[in-house]
Length: 478
Image (tube, rainbow, N blue to C red; front, top):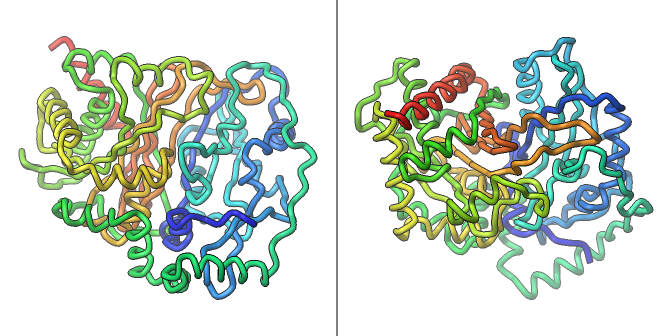
């Protein structure tokens, strides 16, 4: 019997449209080694390791009449060269050109008739560099045990031997229509209410889809709506277009740790205070009215662990962990960022106080419930926007900020050392900006995914993140 998509994972397919593709991505930049590192070499490596992620050879198959949720089936015509692609920038390719390419690739939906992932090798970058861009549909990543295709290609050793994993893979026959109907009938007997829900969702009835997800998550959406007042209006909540812009910023992890120690906060608090400071200056640059009481609400998924013990372990050697794994308990909060506060020290203390207050109150129950249902992974954290609040995102929060600690040792792909890694977090309906943050090998990387029409100046905001970091560092000796 094929695996059936969960209600939560199926919701990603139902909620997706041409303005809100439901895939997450990443941009990894490598220093080209002296040996071979070309498309054929990368293709061979992925082919030999694809057995580690069997879902990446499967596609979604609909049930006739939408009598049950779709199922995962082996792709009988699986073509690795369709998924592992090659691109190039005109030499010497600049970082801005790379970011433009990322924006174009992330704007396009994945083909639902094929396995829902793509990987691009980008050549032609200046300074003897290459990049790998990944796209993975959120329906593919179903919890903490999920492995992204990007994780499969990373090694802790430069010259690790590329072993064969399931090299004799043969696709299993797809179920027949009769088998799908029999299994759907069995499910209908066990869960009769789902028949009507599945039919409504397949008709892309937005209201029914939200109701479906709400029930699947045990009333999370209603709990959120009851507990939270509407988010402030502003330029970050505009109708979402079909195109994106992408920009980046960087900081040193040791600098953020020094700020954390000086003020008794957490690294995540410092990141949020930096984002708040950058958003403040960005609003002012646009001529927006900013008063001492002005706030912007952020949806903030947080890994819950001791900051000085377990948390710092995520910033050290993670040789025994998959890339991106940060723990098995997560809380996600709605936090009002004090963008009206001009003093960086006061701004940080306000953020720290807000995060502690959330942790000590019951306001995070709904988000915790969501995480318990779907497990931890950056895509599932974004679910508060994409799954539950899709219709209400402009009312609940202004910006999504995900901060995922990464390994603090060098990683390699086919002998090439990774020098940078930027996350690309998707937008929900009526959202103009998502900020993905990850740390790697002593640095912190910010990836800003923005709506092309609503935020043509996302590059300005990225530069202001660097300025906000410098401002925050200045508080250590003040």
